[in-house]
Image (tube, protein in one colour):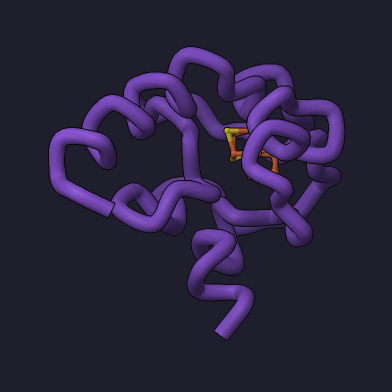
Length: 80
Ligand code: SF4
Ligand code: SF4
């Protein structure tokens, strides 16, 4: 994937991300989008109190198969 596309995709993911409504969310100026490879894990969320990624449009659109990206790493990271 070329760099420009990654930037565009990242913007799209952040726009659609519903992490802020998640019970595990910790407010600390992060923007979510932890499933995305260039964003990856959260520096603030450490406790898994539920994950709503399954309800996020990004999961459907990008065919994601995991969850808890904030604590376990991006889709790419968890797939390897
Ligand atoms: S799948 Fe999860 S981490 Fe990725 S954008 Fe949606 S809510 Fe955020
Ligand atoms: S990645 Fe999943 S568990 Fe983490 S904040 Fe987003 S919805 Fe919640």
